Image 1 (cartoon, one colour):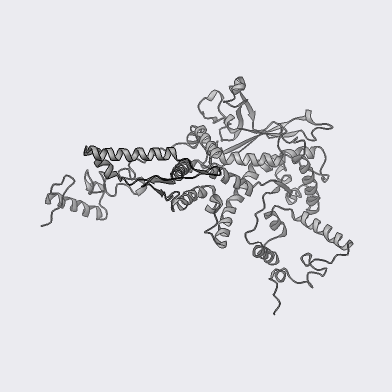
Image 2: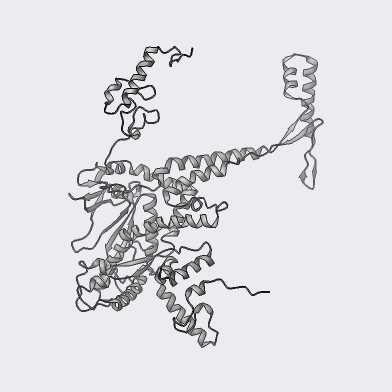
Length: 576
């Protein structure tokens, strides 16, 4: 007869088994309540019964859920209370971990790049509601003038765009986005410095200064209140009114007085001049500070860095013991010689070891200054086979880095930079998916930082009368969005297969699925500059009597000329 044993090893009584079966049947009857299960549920479901929780995610007595009891907190409490610790750990990882440093650099190289170029595109349709003179012709003229003036301001050798006169606008943008990724937020302050304007000085009084996000905090480190959240002063609707910024970093011992002094900087002045550009990616409504992009994977990246160090140390130790010498006395002979107490055996063993020591001390043989290894009678050299790193080292680390890549919105190959096992299609698919995240990051950065900073400068340029305008012009504060409408050209997307991908671009242009402006923008160039440059090159070739290249197209009309689709076809090879 088969018996069921309980946890104590004793036979479970038949009455107990029958009770468990009855309660299980009661739970499956429609309309019956959970109370039928009594104080204890069926075996294996805990004291609350099998159906006490409508969702498995709500269980508190399951072995894998019992110690998982996070609290429901407000977004500002979750972020502001622990922000400094997370930011410090993220920076330490960024400083000392090659994968983290490389990933952030790759994101910046794929978005901002070396130069972040403005393409002014004022919304002439919206402005035409004020005056019909705002048309496409005016927009093109206004855009070219605004771009030329902005280049002189943003890339000026005097760096008058920077309050500290150290960086160009592109360099400020790159650092701002980098801090947004690592620290979780970037802070830039706008300054009006008319005293710098003059001959040999600045042309514009508008200037910007990057501020370390650590300096944004509540005065005297007081706790958050209803209207003060992590240094951000808000009104009853949550609109930022002012930012409380330390005059120096809290660890600047040489600025001890300034480090405990806060300055209240309004979000914007009474005349609408914006003073603070605070950019972060909120995860929840009502969040006033940002969190590092490394936050979800900080612990795993830290352990991975330790694993690399341990593996490297083990490989170093293994390589240090590459050779060892053996003698005819195996361990069993040595043990018997020491344990048996046989004077003759022990004396022979001692004589042999003394002979080995004398042999190696007296043999100092060298040829042309190179020492030659010699062996005593009975000795033999053995080699140690290296076992580090093991065969699973690379797959394991790549798998760990894939979770890191998922957080960054990149493919695993882009993070660990190993395309050895990737095909062209898989590499291209990873780039396409990552490009979506890159574009989203750029658009968010443009909306929160780049375009508002351009609008602040544009207002001064318009006030100076440097840009073409019709007679009836709306107030800039009223039409700021229309005047400052623009796009930004960052890093070139590049090519995996230049021939095939360029052929695809030509097919898209021929099928009206794309425009020359869009395709040039993907490669970080301005289509108008490309067309102007091609006209200059063609004119120069004609002056020198050079034949017109095929890639310039013919001088026929589009109706008579071959289509771009035909031009995209691969050339046929001549038959032998």
